[in-house]
Amino acid sequence: KPASAMLRSLVGSEMCIRDRDSIIIVAGYVGGMPENQTIDNIDIDEWHRTLNINTIGPLLVAKAFKENLSSSGNGNFMILSSQLAASTWPMGGMYVYSTTKAAVSKVGQILALDWAQEPIIVSIMHPGWVQTDMGGPAAEITAEESASGIRKVISGLKKEDSVKESKIKEDEILSLIDERLVAKKEKNYAKADEIRNLLKEKGIELIDQSKEITTWIKV
Image 1 (cartoon, rainbow, N blue to C red):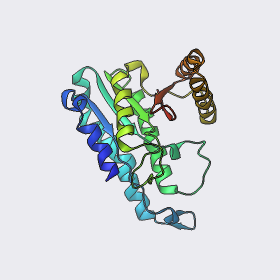
Image 2 (cartoon, rainbow, N blue to C red):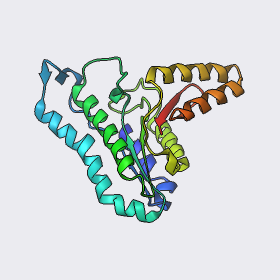
Image 3 (cartoon, rainbow, N blue to C red):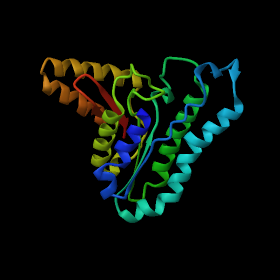
Image 4 (tube, helix red, strand yellow):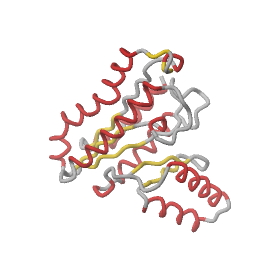
């Protein structure tokens, strides 16, 4: 399945075989069909199950592998979250998935604080709208393209990139990304670089998945 292809692209890569200091949490259990994630029709048992997988599970993985990551001297612990976890997400419903992904984003932020003195980089990344069973065939990028972008980001992270409070609202990020895409189409690369640097100063690292698609990570 496409999601499995994304996982294979991550864990089967040369980087992950060679460097055993990186862990990427890809848990993304949806928690039921959208019609079963409304305020009038919610499955509490499914919510608990999804919380265990999407939120508690990543924390237990972090606990289990902390010593390995720390002893490497340059550990990376990345959590793949979702745009549905953002406070600015404009659509309702999906209570189960959205809340458990928002919660795991907070887990990542707390880990970064708790591990501030450890040689471990903690990051949270939205992998893009990916062509998986959940994203559907109309999604913007393939699983392989998403995995490639994730590998590119994690290989370039530094300790100072560990999760910290974003200094910019998500609608501003989207607006600046659109402005940068226009600048790139007009071959105004100086303007495009200026926008990238501005966002980085505010705690946002851009990932160019293609000429038309840019996603981001809070750093």
